[in-house]
Length: 387
Ligand code: FDA
Image (cartoon, rainbow, N blue to C red):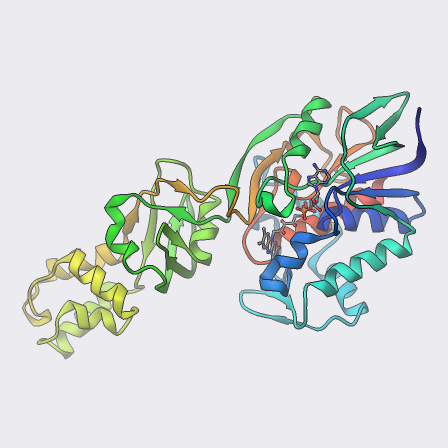
């Protein structure tokens, strides 16, 4: 029994699924879009503090993690940040650049969801919410899902980050059922937890400071936030995607530290390290760091060697995280359906004609700052054009 027949069934009415469904529908395909949630685009609605950081002006393939760093290039080049921005402009949605090329709505993320739903409407997409996927049948060139059938099936159910928003690992189950490899998923863009050795830093929970954070060969200069469990803030979220268990996160808390210390020794020889740090760091962080570094003398009495040691400490504040705060707090999931299994142009599975995977379900993970939505738009568009 094949039930209602469509050209394409898209599983997941999130960012990628909405884009794929609208694109396919507007090209003339009969599209069914299914989701178990009671609303489409729930993650879009909560994104960017309710204003949706919908893309980034600096999008390029280097800003994405994947076992195949080249995989994202084709889709990102075919549907760019400027294409999405043109769509946003066409709908008269006002936007602004917040920082580092990150583009946000002036008004509300609801405008982005409304826009995508209208685009689906123009493509006559049928949207069924509060619908479980259940068993997927496949035979005679048809995929059968929830009483419907189609020659083409698009997996757009995202990753397991933030399960309370309806996220699930169903994409991986479907992929495995069709013999596609899954790169082990892990929480990314996620706060880090620290052990008891970092108690002093927990006492300054809530303090934020601009740093350069390094982990796994990547470095980001943004704010870091000390929390009661460990470390968070944009710089930490960024490097968390590159961090591997057992490895350190290194913070450069002051740039040009040695120059600053030598200057302080010359200009104010009676001053102490604490007051020098106070000029460059939040007071409570300066207090914890000066106690930890332990330079007892006045600046004027400190040797070159002392200053070199203090500067090295300030440029290599090293933490060995005990872990991350997990999928419950991770903004995205790294890993996922292996790109080896997919065509980078169309997102179609190489071994299962008619099966596609897009968005966060795939092993392509962007930096913080609008990159993940751009991947959802670009991969969704590529699949939507191909089906
Ligand atoms: P997405 O998760 O959006 O959609 C998947 C859909 O599949 C959902 O509608 C879900 O209900 C459905 N689904 C899941 N399991 C199912 C099942 N078993 N049956 C049926 N349906 C199922 N990125 C960015 O670029 N800028 C930003 O500002 C933010 N901000 C942000 C804030 C927060 C709090 C989070 C958690 C994440 C972000 N992100 C972000 C990341 C961004 O939200 C994410 O990368 C995209 O939503 C991924 O789009 P997808 O369509 O792939 O998955």
